[in-house]
Amino acid sequence: MNKLKIAAITSTRADYGLLYPLIKKMEQDDDFQLDLVVTGTHLSDFHGKTIDRIEKDGFKIRSIIRMNQASDKEGDLCGAIGEALVGFSNYLYEFQPDAIILLGDRYELMSFCMGATIHKVPIIHLHGGEATYGVMDDAIRHAVTKMAAIHFPSLEAYGKRIIQMGESPKNVYVVGALGIDNIKNIELMDEEELFDYTGVHFSKNKIALMTFHPATLDDYEASSLQVREILEALRETDYFVLMTMPNADTGGKSVYEVKKEYTACYKDQFKLIKSLGQRGYLSAMKYAKCMIGNSSSGILESASFQLPVINIGDRQEGRFKPLNIVDTPCKKETILKAIKKIESKEFVDGIQNLKNPYGDGHAAERIIKVLKGIDLKDKNKLLKKGFFDLDCSIYN
Image (cartoon, rainbow, N blue to C red; front, side, top):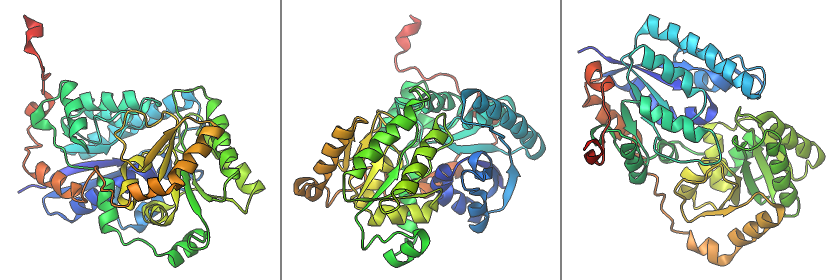
């Protein structure tokens, strides 16, 4: 039996961390040939050159697709997408995978979806059907859904949205979120190892983990003002704040510069680390007292640690949120009120036995089982998928 050749696309530290349990199982499974395609910020020194992490994890990288993004301005993002489309087209022509697999909603995905569509390669999409009203990712995610042949949403509600968009229920499989697989399967650091790794005393300090990305549908200048509002609020608390680098979105560099500024001025309260890696990041979530920002990790993974989360602004608006999350506008006074709320005994007691609705740690196993039951070589069936109508009376 010929192996199924699957090209897995990773463009950031975030999607790589989520894809890790799936591509690890695929690499070890005799039914699959995994082609790992690396692109985006993995190749950027500015963003921590996280391709080194992928290589340390022991993965063989089949192809590197460059996106030489000069800045975080809109024109440079569009240029990077075009360059990646050309590079990926060359990859598809040379290696001819049976399908590509990708996760999420980043703008980088457009290069790979367009390339796969034109080369008639089926697309397998993870985490479709979600909503993030504050960012352009929302439109990109739904565009990817319409180009994809097979869908693996994390929740039943998201699966229904995909069907509502005209995708056949036969091609929609609710499997949970892959990030929960990591929590279940990765041996997390203890506090001593985490200190050696980050230089932050989680046992001696009250740690807030902060991950804040630009809300890309806002004005370009808004991001730096928003992150400054958050940091000014945190200045009035007794938290030591461990910050991670923002995504390579429009406005991302200005957010990074403000974080650097506060780290330089207030070394006793702020620390910025470009990339914690998946194990380091999850370990920090385990031992932090709270999380603050607008990262999807605060929505998807945090409940597994019963970690209080302050979700700021509308970047994650539209996603289902567990009870450990408090939403607040990006205003200093409302952020301080939210901090007071998550520190209350009533709130802390209310999330002590919280179960994560996004999964049980077996998403990768479910995905592989489904893929083994699909004839991925039957492109006629996968690509000519039609439009599934909820109400056929529209034709009457």
